[in-house]
Structures are given as structure tokens and as C-alpha cells.
Image (tube, rainbow, N blue to C red; front, top):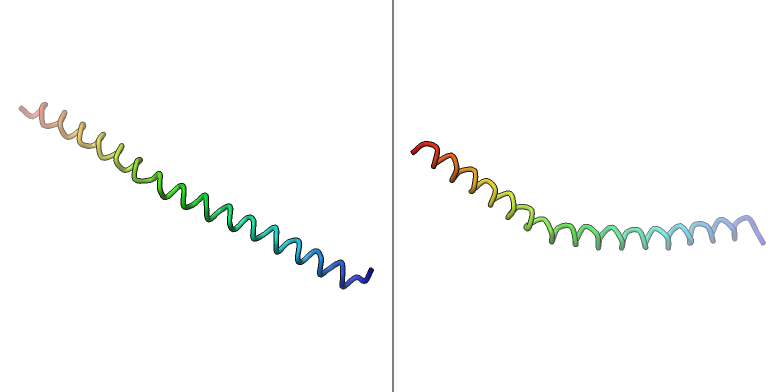
Length: 59
């Protein structure tokens, strides 16, 4: 086997390995983006509760 053949096989292996990583991170980021609105809703509910408590204290 030539040194060029070995280098070509390594480059192709790294390319295929890299494609799996790209797909993995894209899917992970899409899943994370779908879960973020839930966090926003939780924070919004907590802030609403704090505002209600502060309004009650003013009265």
C-alpha cells in the first residue's frame, strides 16, 4: 500500500466521522430549541407570582 492510499483513507474516515458529529449536534440543537419555550414559561410564571406578591404587600 502507498502512503498516499493511507492518507486518503484517513482523510475519508475523518470526513465520515465528522459528518456523524455534525448530524448529532444539529439534532441536539433542534431538540434544545424546542425545550427552551418551556423554560421561558416557567420563568414568566415565577415573575407573575412575584409581581402578585409585591402588589399584595403594597395594599
